[in-house]
Structures are given as structure tokens and as C-alpha cells.
Length: 247
Image (cartoon, rainbow, N blue to C red):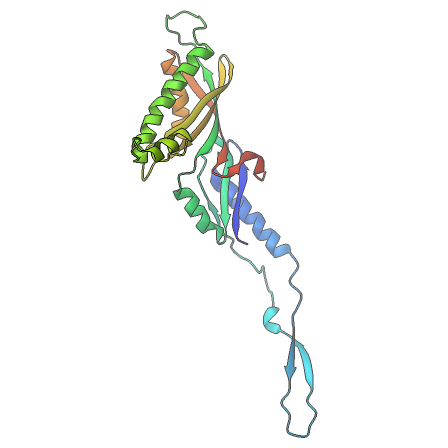
């Protein structure tokens, strides 16, 4: 078995038990499958001159070794971009030769999508219980945050925007950092606002889930309040989307 596949990791579970459970289930499935049909070999006997040649059919014993236990003892399942225990969503795994492709995927600068759930606290700009956080104010903060990340993306992409080719890449959103870089947001918008709850859609590279939770906190500070992250869900990892994951 060779290839890549994606599973949905639930919140509250570390990625290791998910990987171990898949390895265990694959081993059970392989060892419970019926053995292949025995192969036949035709053997021609060498006879002295004048005698009629004959042939006989024997089972290839090498294709049916005596089994005293499970045929398979280990299946290695590799893990791509990992999710911590507090996050959920797309977790890409590799098996067999697919682990080499998985390593290439991890080293490439594919973007990942997340849904972040946040909740604003009770801190206010004038110390009174007023609803000073509005969706317009939130979207202005998100626009400024994305603008700062866009500048960082240009810096780490190491391209000269004065060239026509680089300008076209920037307009089409195809700039990616080269080499090591800090987490960079390539897209950020609010998709749900019902105070104190709100949801953000994020596209990013080189991120960690801790960085994304801190982003919610910093958005709250920019709005002169406080905010905590109540959920991180990865909805895409490169070409793998949440609707195509195994559950």
C-alpha cells in the first residue's frame, strides 16, 4: 500500500493516538484478508532419448509459506502538518512510498486554511459595560493585520516587485516565502459576528496552532478589549480539503 490520505482529527485528541489507531486498524485489515490463491508451476522432466517427456504441476510452496501467526507485523503511517490536542480538522497521513511524497508536502510552501472561533471579554475602552466592538471596527483591525503580513510576505519572498513578473505574481496571490520565515497570514476575514462570539477564516503558511490562538488575543487588544480562542479547525492542507477527509 502506497499513497497519501487525509483524516479528520477531532478536538481534544492528540495526533499520536489518531495515527496509532489507524496503524492498528490497517494491520487488522491486512491480516484478516484472505490469502492469495496458490500458484501452479509446470515442471518438465528430463528423460533419456526415446522416452516420452511428461510434465507435472506442483504448487509453488514459496508463494504459500507456513503461517504460525499474523503475516504483517508493522505498518508505518507518517504524519504531515500536525495538529495539537486543542485543534481539529484535516490531518494528512502517508503510507509506504507515500511517506516520501508527504515529506515533500511538508517542505513545500502550500497554504493551509483554518476556521478560528473567538469570544470577546468584558474589558472596554472606557471601563463601562458598553458594546464598543462592532463588525466594522473588527474588519478594520483585520485589514491592518493582513496588510502587515503582506509586507512580510513580500520581504521573505525575495522578489523585486519592480519587475513585471513579480507584480503579476503579487496580484494573483502567488507569492510565497523562500526558506525559513515566521508565520505569515496570506488571507484573513471575518465570516461570522454575533458578539461576543465571532469567527475568522485564515489562510497562512509556516503557522502553529498556538500562533493562531494568539492572533485572536491580539485582535482583542487592538479593539481595546480582550478575546480568547475557543476553537481552531483546519479546513485545508494544500490540496486536501475537509470535505474529503476520512472520519
